[in-house]
Image (cartoon, rainbow, N blue to C red; front, side):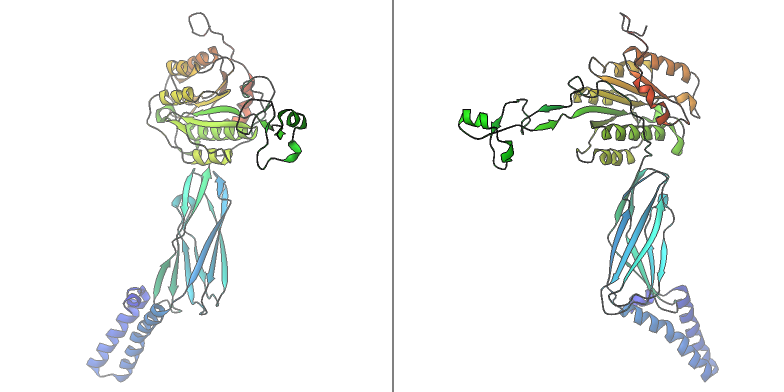
Length: 420
């Protein structure tokens, strides 16, 4: 009963106060009719509180997101499934789901009645213009009486996560020599199940397919021998994303930082679909990506990447150098000085293709003087070490400039190590 009284709405409290006032006036004035009215008005919210407080609804709730990942600016559908698992039909239910502000206003629904063992499904849409990982839920159910005098709230504990990924644009195919480590166009080699580089047959192991038995070797060794399988030779590459706050210009979805994240996502997904084993590196170091579902893992990581306070690319360059074995390095860079460009440029050597996607900071709002001159100097340094330059100014799609990645650096190193 106490819970019911605490759950009185403004209307319920008004009824209760009015009823008590009517009772007091009836006693003072001796009006029996007013006394009857006071009893009725006072009893109504009390009875409603008693009934609602003693009601024991048992509801189960499930939530489904379609899709569980949505691009920036895209929509996702949230489906709520409520089931009344008791034999008692419900009264009026007010449904409210918890949604972050970035996804829109909180959705509210009214269910008049859910019969015994009945099921109701409710759909609503969410949309975000900001990347991130958003928690949807928990769901709250408010139980109200038909007169709106009492309202109790029950909350479920389950919640789900919606990942809003950067915008990914389709890129044209560009031949990047060096992306397949090991040389040439050969993408397969004979390897043992344990990864050995030996083309000779091996001994039979439990579970091997008998159709792979190599009979000539079996006769020679006196035991069952099987042919080694042809396995795909995994190519490797690295994607460097410059997240330093001072290296980017602008604010909001159109800032150079958001453009850089979208470009990195587009390039990473494009290369992953072409069979490249990719690792992601930022100026903070290497990021962990799972081998399974590389595109999804990359997008999930980029969905939550934020500005860093780092002043140099030293940690990122060190992570690239320590990883090693990359046939391709793609660097998505904000504003940097020629000395930083020189340190990065030295990572490229024979057998490694380097592609630098340079965001032309001078084309963004808020760029300082000398930005264009500094950009030209950085471009010259990278091209001098054989990097391929992709210039990405404000308002330009990465898809329109990505073909420039096929163009080799136009500068050659002079004997002093500078660009000629």
